[in-house]
Image: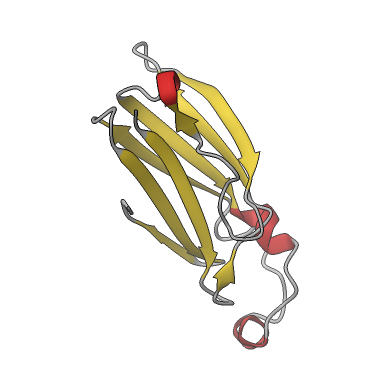
Length: 127
C-alpha cells in the first residue's frame, strides 16, 4: 500500500520548519473538498506519521494546506530577514500555502516537500 508524507524547510534560516499547521483535503467527485487529516509538523519539519496510508490511500485529487503565516509570526527575526524587512508585513505576502496534487498509483510513496520563505515557496514530488 502507498502512503503520503511531507517535509517543510524554512529556506530563510536553513532549518526545518517546526510547528506548522497542516491540513489535508480530498476533492470529491462533485467538486467539493473534504478535510481528511490535520496535524502539526514536528521539530524535523515532518509529521510523526504518514498523512495518508493503508485503505485511505486512494487515487484522486488532494490538497495540502500549510499555515505559513502563523509559522513566520512565531519566528525570531533572523539577521537576514531584519535587513530585508525591518517591520512585519501585514497581511503577510504568503498566508496559507496550498498545494493541489493528484495520486494515481495507490502503491507508491508520494512525498511532497515544501521549501518556504516569507516571500516564496517551491515544491516537487520527492522520494
